[in-house]
Image (cartoon, rainbow, N blue to C red; front, top):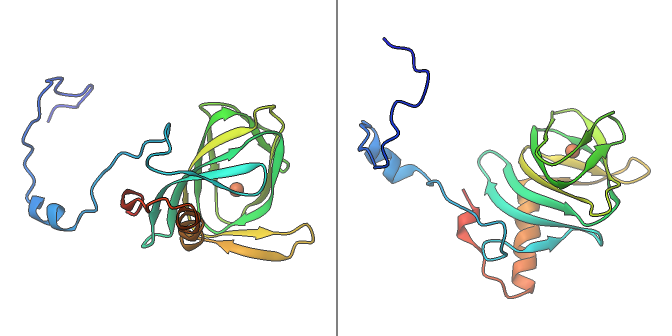
Length: 178
Ligand SMILES: [Fe+2]
C-alpha cells in the first residue's frame, strides 16, 4: 500500500465517500457547525466581573466540555483556580502569563493546562488578552484565603450564558449545544 505524502485529491468537487454507517451518523450525530465569533449574532459577550467577558461557543454536557473566548479587557487578573480536567487555549490577541510559570503567551501561541494544576492568570498588556479555549472538566475557583467559592463545570457555563440571554431578551442559540 502506498504511503500518503500529500492529500490525494485537490478536486474542487464533493466526492461521495463510502461509509457503511452513514444512516447511523445521520440519525445520531449532533453534526458539525460554524459559530461566528466576529459578530455577536451567534453568541454575545457575557460579563465576567468588571474587566472581563466570556463569549460562549460550545457546551457538551456528556463530556463536561465547554468552549469559549475569554476576554480580559485590560491589565487584570483571573485569580487562582484549580483544574480537574484538561484545557486547550490559543492566545488570539494581547498577551497573558501565569504567576506560577515563566512564559508569556502571545497571539497564535498554544496553552495546555492539565488536571491538578492551580495557577493565577495575569495580563499586563494594555489591551488585555483574548483567549480561545476548548476546556474539559471542572475548574475550582478559590478566593484570596484559599477558600473554594465555586466549581465551574459545563453547567456553570450554560447557566452563565442562559441567564444573561434571558435577562437581555437574547434568544438561546441551539447551535452552541453539542
Ligand atoms: Fe487555568
